[in-house]
Length: 241
Length: 227
Image (cartoon, rainbow over all chains, first blue to last red; front, side, top):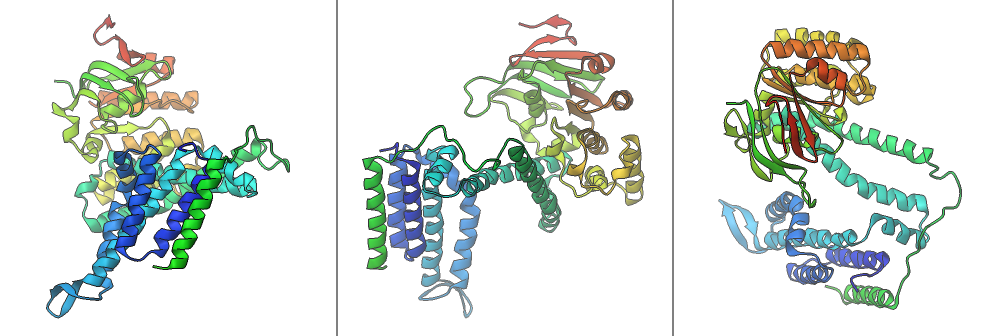
């Protein structure tokens, strides 16, 4: 079952993400998280690998948690300064829900890493998605790590010119990042342009039809998993929170 | 004590079974020019990345002025060692050529009245004057290479590492670069360069280190063959 068709895994990710977006209570989201975790373990993910994937989102999660806690006051006041309630029970629940939602969506998206990008395109094309569109989605996904690498390179290059980023005051640091933003984005755009030229020079979109070396096949296990996931998701949505 | 010292350093890239470098024992002083040569994939660039702390050794230690490189931040290393990347695109992050050249010394507290003078000097020397306001990634490969070297030299580091500095340069500009490196080395800056350009190496290098499959197989500084 670990060798399910990429399309089946896509359906699973979509179902889990829809539920994560619709659920609002920490208890529901926690159960969904446990289920997603079990699914990932089933697909041979190690817990530390899941941690590595979630790590880049820690700062965002913490920020959203604090924002929700402070700016969505409701229920009992837990921490207050004078007359102003800083943390309320309602805010805490909303903050926890937000964090759990991000964790579930990110964890579910890890299923995409269990099959090759080539299979991702093939899967979409066999679902009658135009090849150009499928390829664009693939390239967009491919460019996310390129963008991250670009940022890492720039930060390294800045430091190697003698700037100790850890010692630079925050105001100056923000100003530096603001100045670096345009060249980095423009650099990635140039790379995208070069990629487009390279693709077109190798015949991309030159002919109306494409030849595929192999085809993906859906097996009984795929149909069973897809139907189960879709039916369960619809049932859970209809049943309501 | 060597300025930069490798003590039995081995390195393997994550998720790669084999060692890219193995048991490297080398010292680099601030005297003269050292060339690091070897076939593609022999570990030359990996060695230079270990020298500047971008990569951390898997075994052994790399020391800078007697202290482990791990005790330094990248910024502290950057103030001592200038590094010209193999791919110049990776080291540009400013909006114009002039900004790229001045970034290092402006951030290191250069006096404002000398900033313009220094920019002009490097623009003139590397014949980049016509591109002063151009976005660095819009330059040709040879121009990018010259800008990469100029922007690192402008920070006046104590030690300079150049990874394939002659790629994309014509004979005239190679000669200009060689003259400048000789001048800089004469002023007491240590230089290590990775190059496949044998004529360039022969003209400049007082010491040649040859790598093969991640090991040092020849070090003319020691005057003997390894392994």
